[in-house]
Image 1: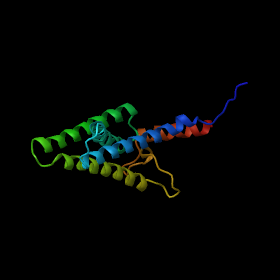
Image 2: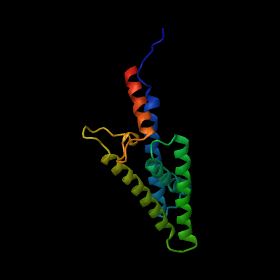
Image 3: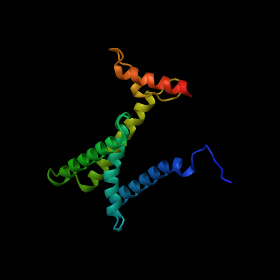
Image 4: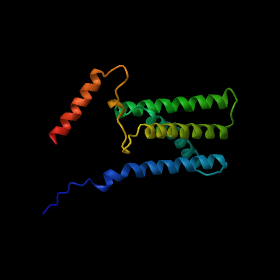
Length: 161
């Protein structure tokens, strides 16, 4: 006899936070290894991961939610590459930063992106503690056709349940 359960599986719901935590740990270890100038075979891959994944995650969090996943991932990857190339230019060509200062600058920029995103989400919270969807906020100039279509689709989905 087969059991049918309506609850989502633990693997599907808990995998994303676990992966995000593992990525943060790898980034933290990479930055630490770079700053203490450790001679470890893990230093290069961990530092490269933190230099690319950190800004990409920060930019992906800062991008609007109405973009689809592939667009957000591509824009975040391109932005992270741009940040890394600008920092590399500051290190190699302009000689404004040392390698350790560049790692700290990218980590600080990543933290700033994530902090700004967190502040924006807290400010957009409603009095009952729930977050509002940015697509449902009507501008001062009046509502657009997009606003009406979104509200109509939400009301239809609520009435069907």
